[in-house]
Length: 358
Image (cartoon, rainbow, N blue to C red; front, side, top):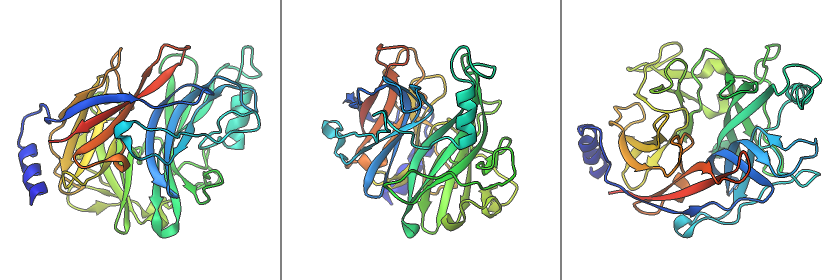
């Protein structure tokens, strides 16, 4: 009853402040082998908190002779965030550099090597394939983790990249690497489950009951207010494109879909134990406004976006603000976002924000 009443009040309010109290309690410790990275989403799998990151610049070269990785990850068993978080570790390669979380395929690695350096073997120099992962999602029934990711093609220049599709990696052995199955053999990108032109399913994902639910906030042509859609599938059939169904406003459809709200390309959705509601937290595009929406059901209706706090980042653009539900304590939740630490050309740190909900 408390959750339903609170939802009704929030849904009827004009956009404004949620009434939360936010305090920055520090920055996450970072290995000296890492100069900077972005992303920073997390999930608990195999009994450990796993934090995933996008583009990562190392302070040393890896076993292949490069200090540029398109993703990375860290592990910690610390889930008491009130006094900050510690214990982050990385898995090193033969040169002592942090490993990829989702490694490139042999073809992607060969392409990146051919275009690496100046001069390079094949023009344009600096072109690359990148894999940007979301957080790992625990599939308890199959004792495995699932990781949604985007396959990206990039060339030198500001914002000179494009997504070519979304897919799902499978992590069955904690001691080994997650695998990117070839789900469309013979296709140009055989590991891609949702090719370009489809919604980028996996912007946020969760398992509830016997269903896996995935949001897609589609920024193509609408980057300032991307519509967010919802789809579901049985977790056992997550790699079968034909098994997916999207919400069309009245039911689950193989073709139609209806936007639930406008969001951002980086989004966290989980059930808040304190609010008793489904909760979506993200940063509004091209701003430092970290906002919250709530709903009694995943299919909505969702409340208006309400301001949680303004991220301390200059210039503005806390695009990777991420809620970490596994850290929630009573009415307190924790959000991170990356920002420059002014050390090196890609030097970055992650601020840890404690947000006390009303």
